[in-house]
Image: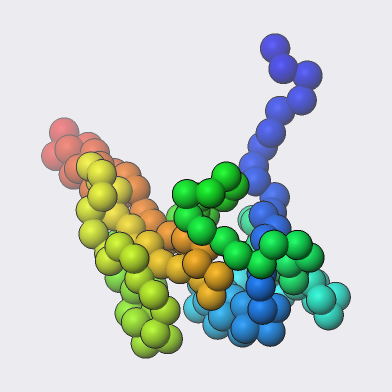
Length: 143
């Protein structure tokens, strides 16, 4: 039996090349996703939705990121439903955010849109299990 047990992911903290540009990007994105600023220290800012927090700060060292390098591959935001994934894609298109994989079914009952932040960090809005839950509910109501 473990001595300590993880009960959730509290926050992620990333470093960015252009703090002002990234702060503007994430402020719009998180406003759309229902996050609020938790703290703003001038050179570091964090947003929260009450369950998780996402922080950015200016990079101090190497100022380049490439998907596939050692480190973070992508960060996924679980959304309420597939309609929210579609709404996120529409928001991203309106904001001219680079979408690398449009809203689609990527695995069985896994619907997602993948996009990049200003530094090329891959982000994802996704929902899985929605169709399975609807099927179970339909079977339950018939049975």
